[in-house]
Image 1 (cartoon, rainbow, N blue to C red):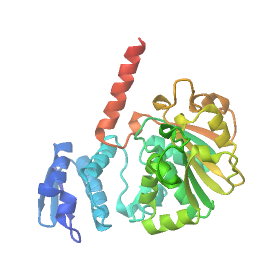
Image 2 (tube, helix red, strand yellow):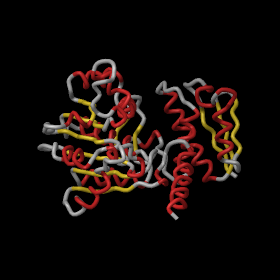
Image 3 (cartoon, rainbow, N blue to C red):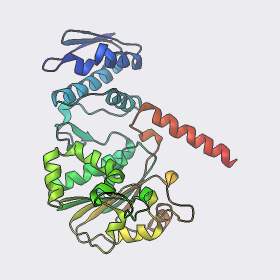
Length: 322
């Protein structure tokens, strides 16, 4: 048994411990062989060395978040635990100079590839101009892709970020919806905004969008364009038809790169329309400069139940086919 001490100096203890030590209690549940106690601004942990290393990583992440004025939620704690429980390496605050860091959030936290699938996306992006990241929900496909796009923009490797999504739920005509164009499409593009808002502070994001340096648009609005010096992301690509997929890929211009993300098992297209993501794996498999990365439930970094939900659905679908 070993012991470590972690100081909460400089932050309100409740921001890290949670109301009535709720977050601390959750850590104790996750590490039953360890004892975690808090007195004032000091946390004491005793237990197996491996547990203590993981506990320290998680608490230091939470401390860094609190010091950057981020309100920590129980979902944040669950996410950190899910990463640890999947034997992924959590990024310590002192590892910001590590090669594993993609970019930093506007609050200073390092964004890293935390699962094998995410790391494969990062590695593939160094060697290929077009990447297909295919896998279930919650595997960080979009978040990792947006981080790579922001990194490329900050390093001036591209002049523009274009984030695209099929607005299938709105029929992509969008005309019958109330409000102006932005009000019509925002609900369908919200996940992209969420990722961007973590990478860039509000003022910088708004300024870049006003200058058209960062553009978020529905897939239907890409027709007829040529995107030069751009980092383009097509999210939820399973909802793009074969014609739309071809249209999107042929928009790429000089010095541009693209990441296409999707989950083949979750298409929202009408029955008579076929997803363009499934056949593209065969159509482009031998094209140099294009890489396919496949993520699995092992890469899930959302709530701890997401992985179990994915597994349960896979078992149900296998039995249903039998």
